[in-house]
Image 1 (spheres, rainbow, N blue to C red):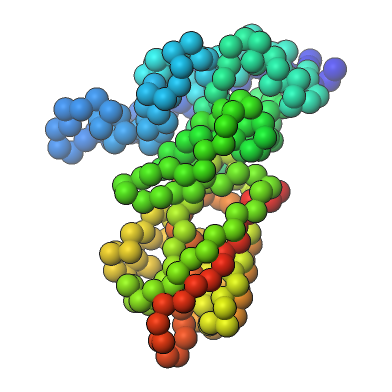
Image 2 (cartoon, rainbow, N blue to C red):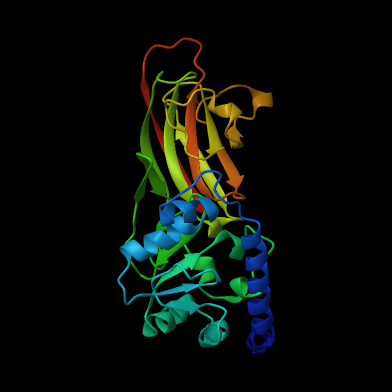
Length: 299
């Protein structure tokens, strides 16, 4: 009851605050330095989450509603169900995610759009995000699997929908990580790069902020390091460590370049696309070798 009364009092304030924050954010966007004639090319240059809007327009049924805290929905060609609106207020007195999902389904909602400014990544996150019973389960493969993640971490979830394992981004296969489920991947470490590497590209939704990315590798008796970088780093990009922020590494450089079977835990404070690398530090290169990588998201 206390939460319900608080929601009735604070929900209008949340809506107003969200609007002000959104206007402030929008006013800081940069215009293109060169003319862009294509609508979506311009929008994706101006708004990092525009690719998520485009995905919704091109890949969802026209009758499907989209639930979101986002204010900037004017480019969506679908009916929007505001998660901080009046019709959503009963959600905030529900105790189970199943009840909340049934309520949304009954009102024609099939997808949830989450954007970084209204997520745990950002101090502008509306308080209603924490109160909403579905927020903690965004990314659960049984209930709300992610079907698209934009470069900045804006994410689309399908209510009780079919899981999507991969996206194709600039010719690279990007794995969508879901909550709780461990991903097992066999990689080949080759000397196509210097130092030799094997790579896995992953997408992290903005809603995973504060959770933990756990990575370990069976290095098949080779000395390797695990390294996590921001962005997608193609194999033909040299000296990537000078242009892409390193988010996590095992072992730490102060302890050595590499070790057998390293593992790492990284508290997620970035969203979007990441490159997980297995880097070889064998003293003598004797040819490509295979390793097994294990990746999961935990609370």
